[in-house]
Length: 310
Image (cartoon, rainbow, N blue to C red; front, side, top):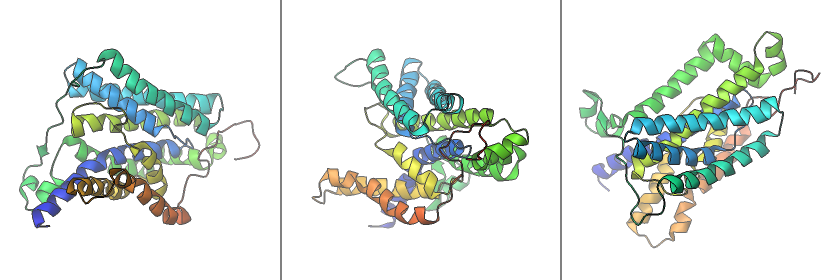
């Protein structure tokens, strides 16, 4: 393996990091208010389908990204409505939304495209080289020659960290996930915070799904998310429910490595290689869960009439 192979591998890892980062940030944001979303895989599949159809039917990637965010936001609002307003179980509602998103993703595609011998193709996001930095040896191709969503995902992590830990609004949002009764007594609208965080989180997860056909394949296929939504949940725990993208780099590296090994034709069953990300998840979470910090009210519905703070 020469230096060009290393650079190529590292560049693909950065490219593959984006859907993990966006989905994990969306999961984290809702979780910070106590909302435990487990519908990520379904929302990503729906975002991929709606994003592809929007770009294909309206002849513009921007339309696809917008529609994917709207679809994800609606699912996020549905989750918060059923759990925050109606006080239904978060895990059960999340699973229901996962199956709905899974079914809708293929249904919508068949309704608008149908069954064709050759699936339609949309243009993928173009590479945007950062002036001056893009021409750097080694680091240029790895970090500064990507589509704009790569840069946006890294910037998003920094902005979310600043928002959560350096603004009053971020403090209120975190307070809702730690002790909603105390936050409520100080005038914080707990329901509004949960609705807003769940909606924005769903938008980010839908955007993560739209990234897949718009960058990887240019086409939508059933199951295109390939478990990335489930891994996003593990990433939220691994990161201690804070904005980060380091864990996303790890899982992106495992994903790219498994694909490289398949292409290398080492004689290993491809089914075994496809389990690598999940094996890595179990191995990582075995250690991460020991010291993992999470919002105290994560997964719990708040009832302001209850005397208990939990």
